[in-house]
Image (cartoon, rainbow, N blue to C red; front, side, top):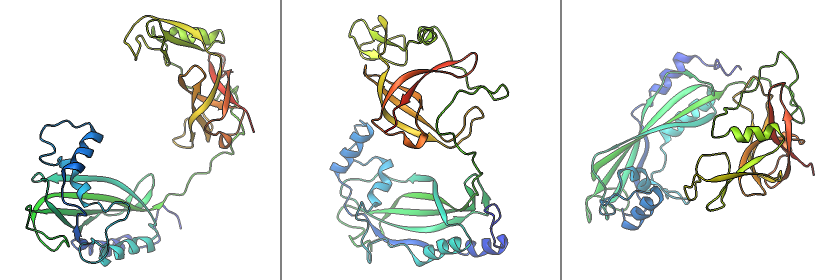
Length: 335
């Protein structure tokens, strides 16, 4: 089956999917704890929110937090917000149609009144809409939107701990997913074991670095095969990339000194997508921590992309990319 054209009649399938709109997705949900000041304080500290209205009321953006079951999840049965049979049937119908993958795409929240410490939160969810068939870069499938209605009983009443009370509607949370059949990946060229200079005249050029008055000294050093780092003359803090002022003390007095060229891989990614004409994916791009204490982004040469590891020692070398461009990169040692 081609993933760009599902092996089902789109009109017939869409009609079956639409029949689930308005049906229950989850019911009988209850917050595991009442709205409380400690959780509000934790949230505000994590978010850096210093609004003086908190914790007398909860930040509106905490709406979903009061409905979450934590790592243990919500218990089944009364108050457990178990997923409905209708929602399971809808997902199974999409699975049978070849839409076996899922990705969350977005959410929307509406706030009707603030929650206060002591409020008991209850909630339910409905299948609000199913989109017509859509083709995306991920593949072909359907967007499914559920709407959660969040209610709160007055402190001391209006809703019980089993989720059986109604309570006042305080907000809604719409959550949208895409259930899709993955697009067939394009065949990638067989990767070279290491990165090499690109001598072919017809090959697209790599992007040129932006050179300005703040970093010109760095590129002058590269031309001399020197990796130059700045050091503040007031607090002695090294910095990279080059900047006009010190991030530690604000001083604009600095000097340049040559790095030893020794470092280790602090972090890395393997680039597969999106493709760039001047590069041959997959390839490794690393954040290298130099012995002098600063970090810089670099190609890793000398080892296959799938052998790069965090903590791997590397040494500076200069790679001639074309007749105009030479770059400092780091060569890894194979184990």
